[in-house]
Length: 249
Length: 327
Ligand SMILES: Nc1ncnc2c1ncn2[C@@H]1O[C@H](COP(=O)(O)OP(=O)(O)O)[C@@H](O)[C@H]1O
Ligand SMILES: [Mg+2]
Image (cartoon, rainbow over all chains, first blue to last red; front, side, top):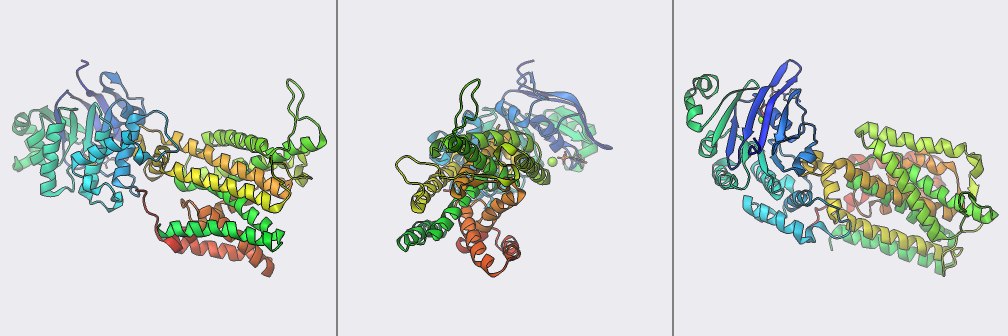
């Protein structure tokens, strides 16, 4: 099944007595947004870390474009086309917003580093960085120190850096957190268009966004996927209602 | 120009005018003192690439300083005895030519930094400090127990090495060489910091995960920085040996590593001119306080403590405020 962009096969991971991932098998298809939802502590971030490479699973495999990448480093997976954003921003805080985006462009370009000419006067880096910032609505903040951004803006910058990589698949951990009503709406609209460039595995708490965006939803509870299906199927699923969504659906 | 830029310009002006004044006033000792400050500044500029840009707290930079020193000592001692370093399988003779000595010093310390860095950079934090310290000490004891080049007593070189077209025995001319090298390396370092490599290295210091997530290897970036850093400090070592016309295992000692680090911290970590300001202050303090009391290191220690506690950007941070991100 090479048309699956991303796939986890029977991933399990324990932290001592906590089973954070239990035999998780899911996939990401071309053009789709696959939302991963579940209560706090369900193991969403842990799964993302195993997909992106920060954390090795105890069991199971991660396939990117049909190739086993389980043994590869985070950097190698990024070079193979994985664009990840973090729930807790991992950015160069002392650098400007533009520098962070330019770093992404540099990573995407690969190859030998220049050591003499300024990075930001290299048009191949600067153009990619600026257009990514433009797309997420951070163009006006290009010269701002990243530490001075609001939490929501940092989330936007995370997305912008992922864009500079032109990845085959996006893996986003709560990109709406801290954005507020207007910001969430704008980001929802943006991700909606982004899926045609590369599919998105989206961890998100904002249910309005999830229901508006998701082609499929997987529900994770206590490290286990208890349901996968379309928005309507998941909403109608009795186990899901009981375990997680409760009365709000 | 911002305040840091003006401060840097003032420092440069001082490094030009003081020796010129001393030359006019026939005060060769002052010229020698300034030369020493400039050489030590260069060693600090090297360390600052690892420490300031890369966040690598190396307490073993004496290794590179010493290798540079011994590169000079070995080459020059063979030249002065007309005794080749080796004859088989091919002939290698000593030399009194500064450019050749510099090249050998830079290559040798770069290779050493590659080996030491490749191992040390697998650790971080306190372990990295301890491992780099251990490598420095290893070379220190090796130098002590190597009788061919003076062992514990060190090695004297009777005539300063030569540079085409200059009389290197004239203090002001030798200073000119050292100052030109310092200036060139400062210029290259400033470019490096803003280059794509500098951007990535800087980011790796702030967030290694971020750098990995865009597909780059923090380890490789740091190793490259460590090698460049070691090469510059090695070059400073060769110049230091030439200044004193003497090399000894002291160049390899942990105290030397500590002093190089003091230059950087005193002046301002990650500031382009931090090590320059730090080395100049160090030499001034050594000279002024050293005349007052044999325990001047204690006063220096107190000053350092104050700087670390109250002025994290060192003296430059104190005078010029927080650093600004480029562009
Ligand atoms: N590095 C870790 N060490 C120990 N326990 C961890 C670690 N990371 C996550 N956990 C635990 O694993 C479970 C899943 O956490 P996480 O993946 O962050 O959940 P989510 O992102 O769904 O809120 C939680 O119980 C959490 O405490
Ligand atoms: Mg989480």
